[in-house]
Image (cartoon, rainbow, N blue to C red):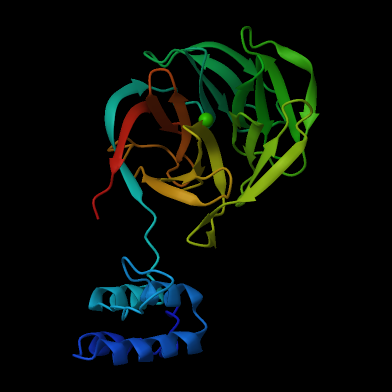
Length: 318
Ligand SMILES: [Ca+2]
């Protein structure tokens, strides 16, 4: 843990005693002298501002109350950082999910559920029936490609790949692949959209904003919680003006300010899978966030999980 920085003593402690003395003028003079020495214009203004005071005429002794002095003292004392809020969840409904689906992207689009899956030789983009979990339509990616995140913009699905630096494009109505791909530098992990265009993670604390056409970089942010970089951001979802991101191999979802990269809150999804088993618990982790904006439904699942969950969040008690 970091040590709390100790500030040098400041001449505020006598203030409340002086203010409580029967000679407020003396207290005030000393206070003003102290303030002037500190060069603290804001505190000076606070102490000398007397309700009803004016700039001319007879000078009314400023009144320094204990509470005003306390306020000033508090203003100059470093406050402990507020903890990042944490949300917990309840399951509204559980739906079947294809245990063969190594989920990399989850998306509610045009009233339907879409999913992208990974692993070489198993990577697909698929339209899934929410109620039954059945795959209604799917396209296989080339066998050598490891599929990653999925998003839709301007009538096209964009599907990332892990290490080949190519995004595959599909018609959103037919899932027919386009004849070209877009290139991007580095690895591809999660993908979502916002008004600016595409929002992409790459397994680091960096989130990039990209133009849909050609996937050119617009800007990027570094994601931090309490100043600490948050690594291995994975599946993404844009929800009500925030970027939500799975942290890989954890049950945590970060809710991120898209302007600054600050983590506004955490969502703790511990226990979502319940007593259900996966073959490889270290690999087959929470990784799938989709939001039905119209129905205000939040869906989450994981890699090769037997279920997909409609969940509702609430602040976690301390
Ligand atoms: Ca998503």
